[in-house]
Image (cartoon, rainbow, N blue to C red; front, side):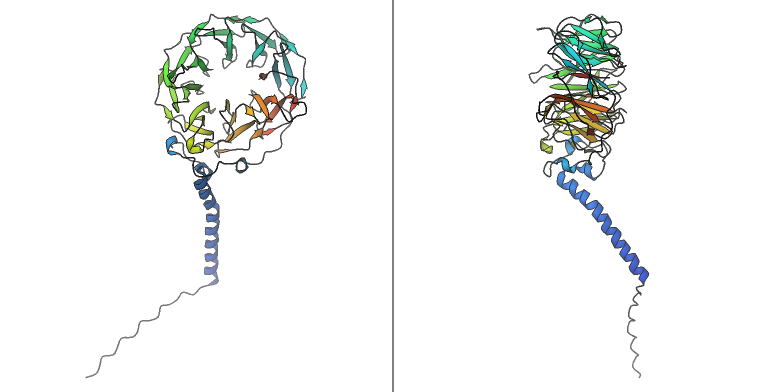
Length: 447
């Protein structure tokens, strides 16, 4: 019997031939992978080690502030923020009006020519100074019971407008045709007097409460909001006053130690920052009802709303998760949700916060030595290089057209330690050459 034939051994696998095309494709894929890793990895690592997730790209505003952490690395330095400033443009054509309380005068400064005009005598102890919307009249408070108009076309004064009781502050309606004068008689509630700046007639004073920390007029001019802070660790309130009748709504309870109030451009919602409560209270203007408080990281202070009314920006301080640095917290007005905080080192309590007319930048300023105007790019959500304003800046004012800001203060490094006016080009975020001034009080108005 014949033995069976053994099976053939398995055929060796056929190896594909590597052509020059295959090699080229492989090299291209490796190169693409290397570039992708090189571009993305640093962003991921930087976000992880700095705790600033916004450096890796914009995030939606539906993130709770309490879920966001600024911890993870050393405090950011200005050298890592923004880009180098551009060359400043030519001097803008504005007129600044500065108060000199020592001799009862107002000093006009013409920014285009960098010259100081003749003093305008207004009376003893001038203090508050404001400009109407058209820029035709400047109003100066003298003493504690009169407002002096200055016609800017001729820089001459008109008849004083008398007001009653000691005046503590003045704010204007959005059209700047009326002024609200706040008086604080000892042992009495704060009084509100409406002054028609066209006719020069003052209405009867209306009591509005005690310890009004902040006041603001709604953009539609119909409602005046006053923050009432009783102190002593007690909850405060927001008082809405009808500007047409002077009637005040019942106080709306807010949080502990309320500080600032802002109103959306459509005049529908007011927001109150509660320092001790670490919240922001939204209040519906039509119903005079408060919504659920918005929790903040740190102590909320000053606020501003973007011109399109979509975003509320809140400056907070003492945020432990952010190493105590001041941060800017964006809040979606529609949903009430907060976005990741943006660190803004050196901004302090930011006594002034202003959103640019196009909404692309937020400017922050707080009085203090070696001061600067800080700013945040709202598109990239990063802080830019600070704009230096001298060693001791006591006031800052934005021009009505949004093109320029002016810092007023003294420079300890100057030979004469004199007062100066520093123009700031807001298109390039650069400070121009300071305009030397005679000694003036740190109060100014612009037209």
